[in-house]
Length: 174
Image 1 (cartoon, rainbow, N blue to C red):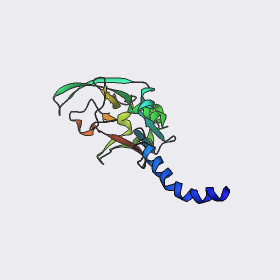
Image 2 (cartoon, rainbow, N blue to C red; image 1 turned 120 degrees about the vertical axis):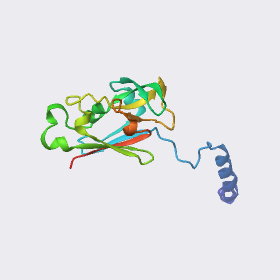
Image 3 (cartoon, rainbow, N blue to C red; image 1 turned 180 degrees about the horizontal axis):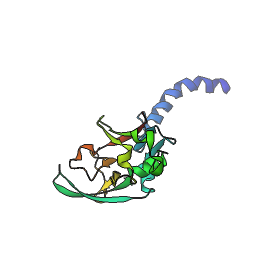
Image 4 (cartoon, rainbow, N blue to C red; image 1 turned 45 degrees about the horizontal axis):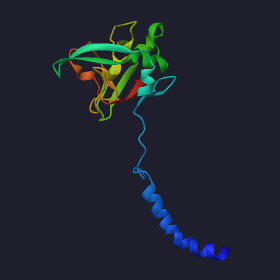
């Protein structure tokens, strides 16, 4: 009997593999989608990788702004960039002095677009910038061409430093 099973094994292997492929999910062989992430790195004591769910658990800020590109009022909701940097261990408040005043932040989009902020610009102890990492606009998740994360700098005359499809925030200490 054992010899008969061994003889059948090579003949059954092909049909069994074909059946497994037929029954496999349609994503078989494709990369499994991971949730969108925002990475905070560089001169930080605690590098962060944040998802949309992580942002939802943080203190929220709502901003109503007029977007000059769209020529309409928009309401964004998200987390102050200052709060995210605080959680990453970046100097703030009274600790932001001396050589720390030369620290800057690079925000980069999926398409390679990058902007720079001085750390002082993002510290509410120095100025009220209210720069947020938004994840919703007008109560809905950001559209694919805008999000899932968007940097919104509401007090700027032009939205040149509003970064859509935000993927990384890098803190640089010269």
